[in-house]
Image 1 (cartoon, rainbow, N blue to C red):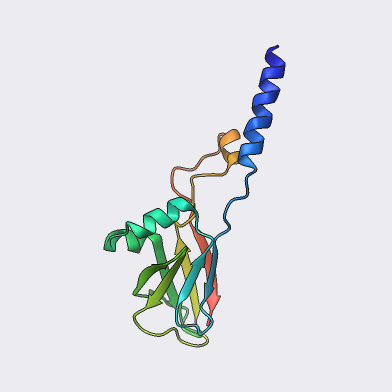
Image 2 (image 1 turned 90 degrees about the horizontal axis):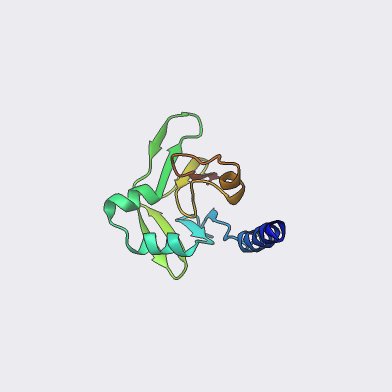
Length: 134
């Protein structure tokens, strides 16, 4: 019957969507000279490998705020792919005691499965953000 077909479709859809997604992790390297992005999904890896200067700017943004100043300024740097990891290396070294706001569209989407089912989709990609303290 139709009800059985609908239940089977829902079960199939839920089993496909419950597949473990890669969790993006953003951390300093062990020597704090770079920011390491791990857990990238295939789409993000492809985008990063095909990057141009303008796309690299869109993939990763790093902002520095001084310990006492409260003023944020963008940190210039270079992104490089090493295996399945993306590495952001600043032009000038990270300063001990400063906070760094990292924004990225890596592993981002317009919404999750539950957002799609609720018709609660955004018009822009939801960025990942993390504050790192050197």
